[in-house]
Image (tube, helix red, strand yellow):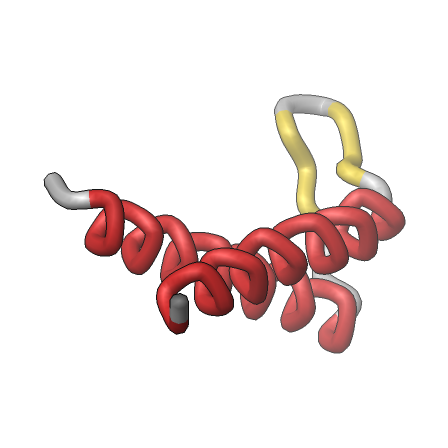
Length: 63
């Protein structure tokens, strides 16, 4: 797999993760992992982190 294809696939993956966590925040969906509830602040951090990685990956493709 070439580097450009890898960056594209990773950027698409992180974009999807960003969208899903954003939807969780907007619709206030509670997620449980076993008997533990995943806090909403986790999704806020995930949106920032995954969004940054998606944006950076797409910027690398332009070079």
